[in-house]
Length: 125
Image 1 (tube, rainbow, N blue to C red):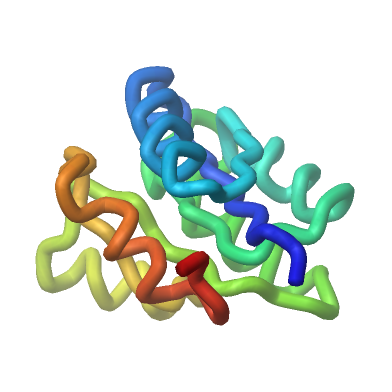
Image 2 (image 1 turned 120 degrees about the vertical axis):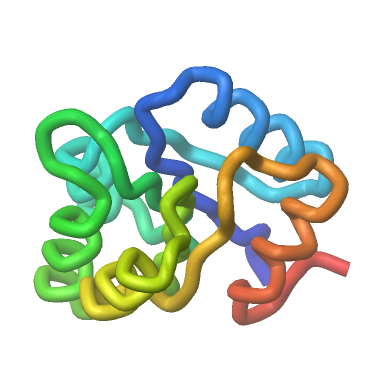
């Protein structure tokens, strides 16, 4: 079994660093995208097992990137929104765009990996 590859798409360098650090510390492979366009391009070039998608990014936002990924790839990995805006209306928009769930920001180092693993088909042991 190959080690899961997790794509983290976020325009905030601190969030990217923290997510990468926590996931790699647990043994996952991580690739990054700094905006929605990059996230779509990475999905065309790689086959991530899971995508963590920031919703508010410059250019193509995470909702549009999610819709493009879901509609343009034959294999669609789970996409989990990373958002500070998990209010009632935002949750519906996130799920309507095709996200499989969401994780609130700021990232909580104590439970982030466990929250991510909830969405992985086969988490590392």
